[in-house]
Image (cartoon, rainbow, N blue to C red; front, side, top):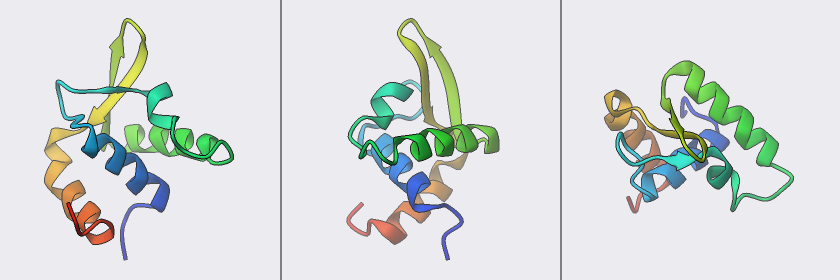
Length: 88
């Protein structure tokens, strides 16, 4: 069983596709876009939880708060993503 929820894996997948590691980052507003409006609150809660647990790193930008995948956990996250998305 995965140690991440489906919402968390969806967040990681979106960040992974857009190469948001370290230098690359994504605004939280843009991260929640593309998800159905009825689950955007859950996605936002999951982002806050992942930041708290250290899987995502916060970054301030002139446009607002942004996040990226913690490079120290990149391999672990990749393994979890490959279980759900084998084509990665």
